[in-house]
Image (cartoon, rainbow, N blue to C red):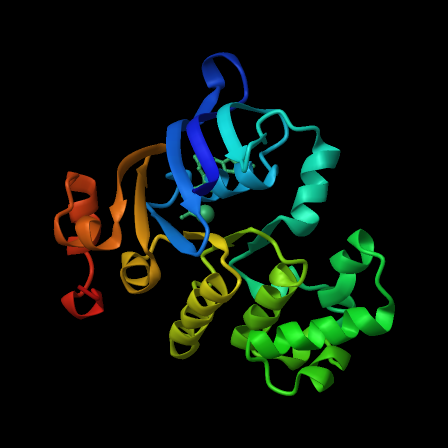
Length: 263
Ligand SMILES: Nc1ncnc2c1ncn2[C@@H]1O[C@H](COP(=O)(O)OP(=O)(O)OP(=O)(O)O)[C@@H](O)[C@H]1O
Ligand SMILES: [Mg+2]
């Protein structure tokens, strides 16, 4: 059963001759407990696909087609309702963990912020839950970490804290947009392993956006390849990597050093 079903999603920014058609008939599904990886060159529409699910398309953009979230249509959903879903059902983690946090607020304040908005929960209980989430995302000394500020953590640790923030309200969908791109290579594998574990433990429908085919070959269950705003290939990891059907997919695979592919 799919949690998210995109059908013929189109996104156009601007009007008339200068209109930019960003997404063309994009269709694929996200399933619970499954990582769906989206690969493609810069500008192919990966981020805008994730943003459309989140209800964060650019101002003045026209979205058409369908985004079915468990029977609820998200295309045309009033912004306030989409905002409510973002607080709990739909979560997102971005590329640069440093810019995802306010420098002057403690980690405890930031990890608990949206549950305290959406749920009737005391500050003490919220912090207890935040500490549990930091433990789940393997941040060392969770209770201490809550009292610290963003600059006191490495990029890799901050990204783990961003994952804790994303999952604290028990979302069903997690969109991770280039979650390891800004991190030191030595910590990337650990963060991807964490994403895999969170997906499995919380039965999340994960959309993993990356331009790095090596990343997808190591963690994605399913791969969607985009080019110029269109889906050009889709399939389970094995079949896309071993028997790519589209020339563009082959070029992505061939551009990788052979050792990076987990065939
Ligand atoms: N806020 C915006 N307003 C108008 N057009 C935008 C906006 N953001 C992105 N675009 C356009 O949408 C297209 C797809 O961009 P998108 O950010 O989804 O690409 P991407 O595949 O995520 O690329 P990258 O790998 O560089 O992150 C690009 O042509 C881009 O110029
Ligand atoms: Mg992007």
